[in-house]
Length: 378
Ligand code: HEM
Image (cartoon, rainbow, N blue to C red; front, side):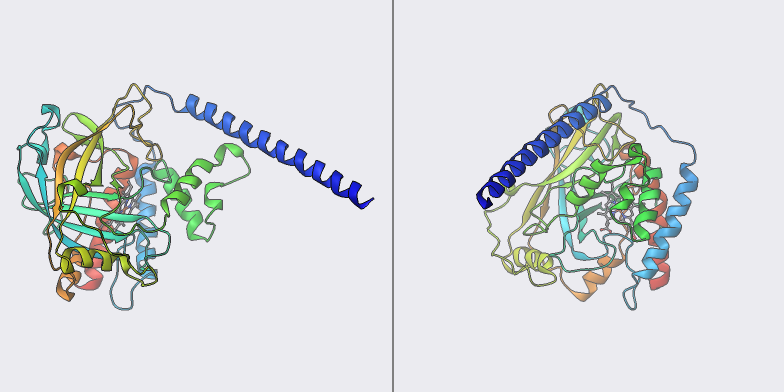
């Protein structure tokens, strides 16, 4: 009797497994067909600004300032995002000598030109936490003494050209409207429900939830050992592009970072310090751009969609070197905290485009002004 029961149970479990497999494969197949249909080109190569975006942006600024105040670090007001820095380091940014003439725009105009720069490496979270916590990691670059009028210049930034990235290739929301509703839900504690706003399956954003979960990834071994992407699109002269910074160890002396203790809260800062300050070995990167091909699904107004690399390959336009250096001093860390990076600190040739970038224009400036005023550092 017992044996028959076990056999029956085994049979049932077998059937259930097959059923789950069929449902899973079917769902995956239907999902693939749906996205192949939904994500097919051509797309516009112009910005398309939806009505009501400006009003939503104003609400988002107010939310951001509230968060900054909530996360106040005893005495200092930190950034609303990427609050914890691993360090601000000096960088040399050299434009390739050989470049497609169509890419010779803005700061890439002069072959072989080396720009001096600051690079701030950070964790993405709104308040400082242990580096082992899953998170996005940020890289912000500020080229110095760049001549020419900028799209936006606050005090002390008129000669800056900034590049602002984090280490994932797509964003967890498509546009300003979704950012507003997702942010509001997350602020009221509904982390996952933010992606399922109501019972109507058409409002569900499972794909965006997956992007958010993937973005919150374990830390790399070092902040110089991961790829950082612009995610949002930009102009490069007449081209629409996305950019990224990849490690380029081949341009630097051979170096193997000793294993870091991941139980220490700031092991990413330690890794940077070990390489640049103790072992005195430089770190190297390449800056690459990807040109939009509007015949395919490479939208400007949807940051949740990665532009397909097989259709729009990345092309190296500059190399970046972090020379061996001492960076971890009280003065330099304070200086770093007081810097403001903003994708709109930019020559018109590198103009940010798309809804998420339009949103960033107002929010970064407002948060930066606010924290500088509150910290008495302007
Ligand atoms: C393409 C998507 C985005 C990327 C790649 C990105 C990346 C970054 C990075 C790396 C930083 C730190 C810059 C530094 O080191 O000082 C930063 C700061 C910041 N981000 Fe973003 N971000 C994105 C979208 C957004 C959005 C949609 C918002 C909100 C509307 C936002 C709000 C902020 C704010 C308020 C700061 C701090 C600005 C300051 O106080 O100086 N970001 N972001």
